Image: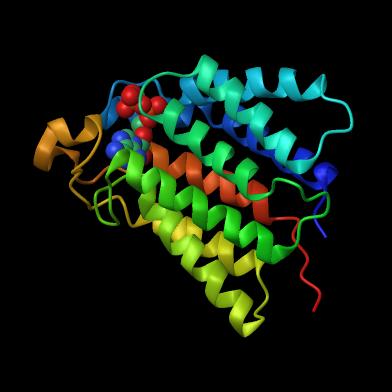
Length: 208
Ligand code: ADP
Ligand code: MG
């Protein structure tokens, strides 16, 4: 069972990875965007950390809603609304649950993925965070059906999917303005999404 404490550790880890990779994300976004992805994400995560520190006895749903609101209120650009939507959808899916099952988590991630695809109108292959999100959510679903070991496989899928954005030509977001010149660079949002899944899954134990 996953409780608020588990998700709190996940978010603290995510914020740490973002902070440690702030320069790297900035470099990636300087190559094919405007160089603010590391700054955006770090600002949003720090603001969210402050807000969750003041939350007492929160449910997982309240916890993720607080994160969503903190990100939406402090991050602009493409990534603010996208990550804000991710955490809002996770919150909505987990509403009313104090102990979250692996199946609930899978459903929450599926709902988050569906929502960001509607919002950003990107598909796999467009060189965005969807290139990481969709294969990871699919792998998660498949692992649950087959009862495979989860965490290592999912993190590996996230990493490989992130790396697969390198040769792609961007068709959505700011990087798409570069056309062919966006190829041969790793997508910044796919990279922060990899960090998210690493933080989310690295401590996950599945018992059946
Ligand atoms: P901005 O592009 O507004 O400067 P960021 O630099 O913070 O915002 O985020 C850029 C990342 O957002 C990209 O690397 C990409 O992964 C993601 N992104 C941009 N547009 C979209 C979209 N339409 N759908 C999904 N993800 C997108
Ligand atoms: Mg940017």
